[in-house]
Length: 97
Image 1 (cartoon, rainbow, N blue to C red):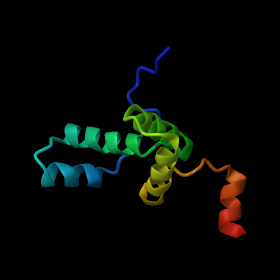
Image 2: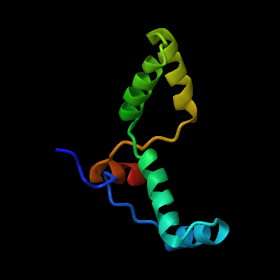
Image 3: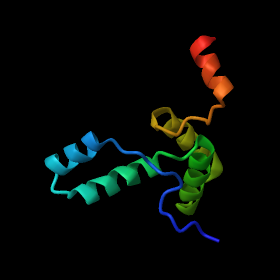
Image 4: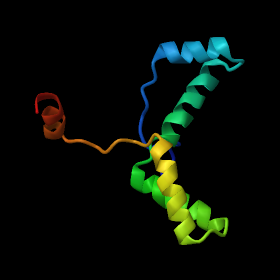
């Protein structure tokens, strides 16, 4: 069964950002919100999800694995991907050591 919602998570978007986009572009407030949600959803991929998706895309272009993995390795250096999910304990350790 497919998830009927377009986004895997509910994104809380700062009103200031929505206002800024609707003022600085021809987008309505609703359209600006949708664009922000689309961007957040795009960058919500984990590293593993990104690697799998990118591998499929490059494979569909006819590239071989050696080339694919080199390209993915290079892409990951510059790609913002979702950070790993951290437990409360891990968060505490980041703050308190």
